[in-house]
Image (cartoon, rainbow, N blue to C red; front, top):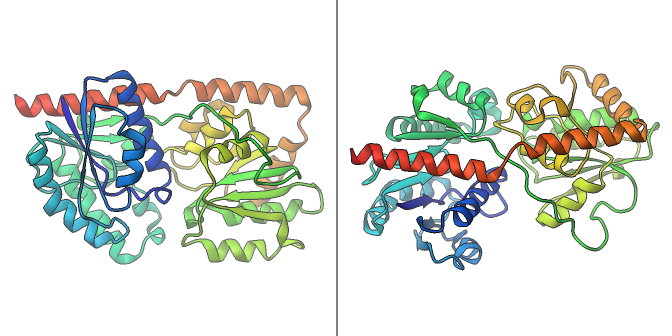
Length: 373
């Protein structure tokens, strides 16, 4: 089978978990199915990055679409006009679009990945034009695609709730953590003990509440709070919370860290807190567990699927409860902490990127075969 992959959405280092998702699945197909042909339809921003990662595999080919993904309107237009032509010329049997949107008209059957319906529950994360465009494009993708991939059972129910998708067309492919390779050299967070969170500052990530809980603990613990992520639409509220600290310098903001450096941050953290109010899956929860770090999160969205029985949960309506759970986690006896680490690693290990790749490839084959019949 010849698989076309629409990567026009991908801006390296900017799209978070969806970049990890795409690359891990491609890694799995390359490792497990070397006879499958893959053509990556790339953009101006990601062409060099993807070639650097995959041109060593003879099964991969590349076709750059003259498109600047950071200009959303341009990307959408060229996805609808130039991409179908390129797919037709390539001879691909199926087109996979792992970035919410698909082609309105395609010469081959399509499969789309819709990670969640966050823009419905938290519309403030997007501007009004972006929200309207996203809704139109997602609905069109649901109608035009033979298969819909999503990353949790929660997200499947959200897609059914907000679109006309047929349940039998939605395939759940959970995410997974990766083997950790901490970087050599000093930890990016410094030598002091710290609490870690990994999230861009979108409003639904709820980082301001984590800082408010840290304010309550400021005089009771020696730890810093390390937040890894880029500034987004919730940044102002986060900065206001940081400024309520007696010593705002105890909150360290990091972004653009390498994968190995992030592994180091997970492994050395005393506790990982993910206060999000909505997630399609919540991959940082598994990443922290894989490193043996205790995890505190909410029961919102898909997070109970990601955290299972291995995470500690709190009610996001109560900031003082979050402060209490953090303090309890930091004060756990050594034996109890070791048990938490063991259960976390076992839970994270129950998810597999190869299984995700297998299910994705099966969905692509089914779409191609159904269309052929």
